[in-house]
Length: 37
Length: 361
Image (tube, rainbow over the protein chains, first blue to last red):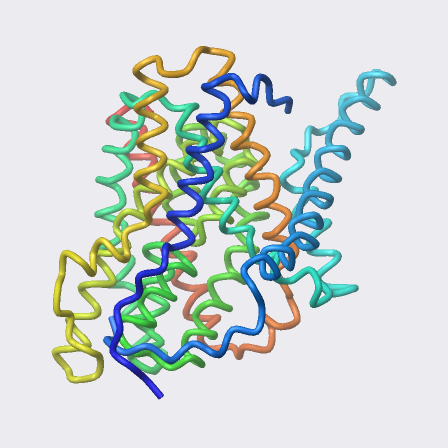
């Protein structure tokens, strides 16, 4: 069965952007001081 | 895009349950990726301690090889599959964070050159693949999927196009299998060709970003050459990804005009839906890095976060590649894909040589 409905879910892309920006802000605010590699 | 969607199945797991279900697979990605890093460092340490000059094989290749060995011998147990499938999520987060390692000026300059080459590559590759598919008498929609997959953006483009042109799931599986198999091959072939031709990091990265279809494989093929080549490959591939909406929209309108796909009601909304949002995230972080929002040590930390995200991605590239399954998909789509890939690789190599001469990459 199908129904005509627009998708309002946040895409994987968008979640990845949110996570990355949150991580960058953790570094900027000094909560995450060093990230070794 | 189709205006109707299938009703979702009744929810049997909570959000927390679904999230917990990802953890084993993400841990497996981390273990495989980290094992690759340990092997790289151990070989380097051994060479240094014993005064041997050993080839520096990046952790990228080790992570992919360990993943391939697991998925093609033991197989990936069901418990881990959901988490392993998150590798694309880490890829996109890694690309956004990679913006910290690019000044916006470099992005615009190299991005401008890449975009110019992407336009040329797109026009040539789409035309060539469509004629090739017709020549091999593939179904028109399978030909469309292969053309989009090999000219724009691999699996993401194929999935986006499937929805937009109402293609069969079988055709989609064929196209995805062909693109993934060829992507796996390119991981080994591209660095060899790059070294044989003594390509610079910039030229090789641009070539990998233009010619390798799937973003994960393009990133890995670049990183296998060098860190700098990996950065350029991601930038060039990101430019290709940015075109996905326009190409899919073009095909959606074409198939709708033939009455074989749902009509596109709002082109702007369609483009926004298909546009890869991580491209915007990448530009934002690059802009912040360029205006001094981060100190130098913070830029290093953000850049390292992107490396950890890519480590999970590369492990996923190996773990989700099942060579036996890919082999089952039949010869014709694979042959069309392979011929197309070789021709596109040669065309893009020519474009990169030209760009290197004119723009001094």
